[in-house]
Structure formats: structure tokens, C-alpha cells
View: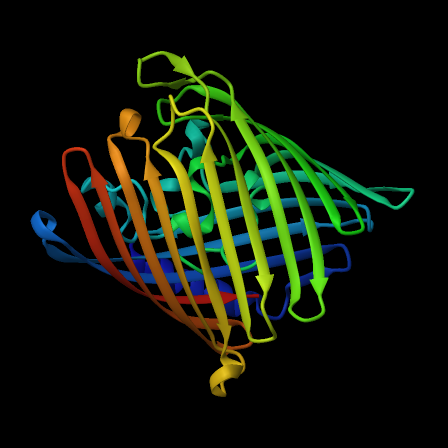
Length: 365
């Protein structure tokens, strides 16, 4: 299916369902359509401009028969892969658009399953001030671990995958697993286990725990502070060619600085450096409200990330990514974003670099 045909079908779907999203009191439908065009200019021997696009439609169906029970089905359909394959072919480790695109939605995780991303059930228990919510099914670990208010959604915030989540954590998506969330006042605990496949097609188990704390500082605003630990089973190849595990810790912080400015910070540490592309991650940025310049609904944000390469394993010395975007709401249901990225990556045998500009139209309801 070509981009033009997919865009037309997505537009028809948007028009036909605009007035029927709350199907009844127990069933709701969420739809997001994201069209992207990216153009990159590569440095040195990677010279030349390349432009490509994508259209992705995400459909979520949520059944909530009671206040304590809910079941979710999420489907995604896409045409095009934007610039991701081009960056991969040229040797880059990170891709400039973190969304699930055409190549990602077929034979998901080698499970012979297309388009179905999530299928889970959750029940909430309340006891002595505690809120306990176990979830089982086909889940996405990024919905629970390493979340962030300002850098966690590639369709409305930063596009590069380094700002979407911590790349060192290799958080799995769209496979069988379970998670338990326990909340009490400002504290939240999450424990997650999943079974998925790595790039070599080998099944492995993934475990993660996260502790979060939320607070409101009168002189600043609301903030969220999270620390998490993750580990896999011994199903990855280390630099000696042996089977080994991936392990690390991370921090994901977001804090309002005042009513106009928000900030975020991520830290990642690879605690088992015989595996993994990188040793450490430091990323952060700020988000500015358009109230500062008289356009209350506009958003401008800038982010920067440095990754210390695990050269013994991956041959990468370091990666640096800078990204800025300006988002303009068009209607209650749509927004237009102008995005720019600067990306350099030094390997033991070569240096890579590129500028990437993007135009992103998002419609959601």
C-alpha cells in the first residue's frame, strides 16, 4: 500500500469516526493519525540529501465494564518508514523517528503477528490506602518503565528514539508479559516481566522494577522522579562471543520550573558492560509554553543527549544528538510540528553525522 492511498484511507477513517468515539459508557475508541516527511543531509562521505515520509494510524479500543476493570486492544497500520532504514543502512545506531512504522508492524517480534500491538487486561484492587493494579497480556514496557512528561511520545514530542526512552535499557514492546503497579499517595512501584526476542531471533526474558515519587513544589510546580533497574536472561552475545545478560539502572526526571517552563533529565548506566552498545547516557532538555510569546497553545522544546559508547562490544565511541521542535495546534484534534535534529556518531573505524529536518502532522481524537 503506497503513502497516498494510506493517507486517503486514514483521512476517511478520521472523518467517519469523529463523532462516535465514546461508543457507550463502557467502550471507547481512540484514533491517532500521524503523517511525517523527513529530509536529511549527511556529512562527509555520506554526502547527499535524502527525503522520505510515512503515515501511521493507531487505533485503540478500551473496554471498561467497571471502575476497577479494563481491557485494551491497540492496532497500528503504517505506510513508509521515513528515514529510519536510510540511517540504519549508513551505519547509525539510533534512528531519527521512534514511531512504529511499516517494517515494524509485520511479523512483530518474530511472532507471525501483524498490526496488533497490545491486548491486555487490568484489574485494580484498593486496600488500606493502596491502589494495586496488575496487568497481563501483550504489553508495551515503555508505557510503565522510564516514562517522562516531556520526552516519551514520538508523535507529539521529540522524534529521535534517544529522547523517547533510554536506549541502554532496550525496553521491549508488544509481547507477552505482566506488570504490577502499586500506588500510595505520592509513591508508585512498578514491577514488570516480559518474554520477547532479540535481533538474533532468540527468546529471552526481561525484568524491570521502577520506584517513582511525585511532588508539587509551590515555588516551581509538579515534578516526577523515577529510578529503575532492568536485567535480561543470558541470551545476548558478549564481546567474547558467549551468552550473557543485559543489565543497568536509569533515572527519568521531569520538573516544572514555573508555569511556562518544564524540564526533563535522563541518566542511564550499563552495569554489565560485556554487552550493550553503550556504557552511559545523559540526556535532558526544556519545554517552553507559547504563553511566553503570546501564543498560549504553542510549544517549543529543545533536547540534547550524549551516549558513551561501549566500543569493546559495539565499536561505538560516542553518539551525540540534539533536537528541537515547534508544535502549533491547528484544531482541537490536530497539530503541526516543525522538527530539526543534529546527530553525530563516532565509531572506532569511521565518523558519521547528519542533519535531519521534519514536518509532522498529527490528528488524534
